[in-house]
Amino acid sequence: MTLIMLLSLLSLFWWRNSVITMLLCLEATLIVVYLMSSLSFNSSLLFTLLTFLSIMVIGSSLGLSMLVTISRSHLNVLTSPIWLMN
Image (cartoon, rainbow, N blue to C red; front, top):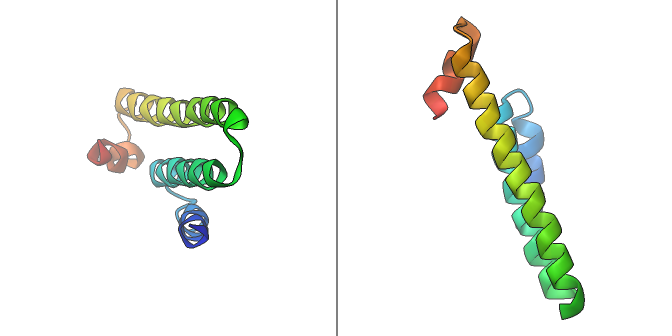
């Protein structure tokens, strides 16, 4: 599990110039954090932790969709790679 966490963080730093890939790596990191913490904490904290991490993943997904929507509204050569991602 820690190997997956380290790979997610490494890929997050590797793709720092590409916002979409960075957000996807951040979502994977959040999911791994939830899985690691669910195995180590007791059940009373799991509901709060699940709610917190779900809100974070939803927020990053919303940020990703807003980025794609904004890039489609601007007809620029620099945003054409973002059009291909969706």
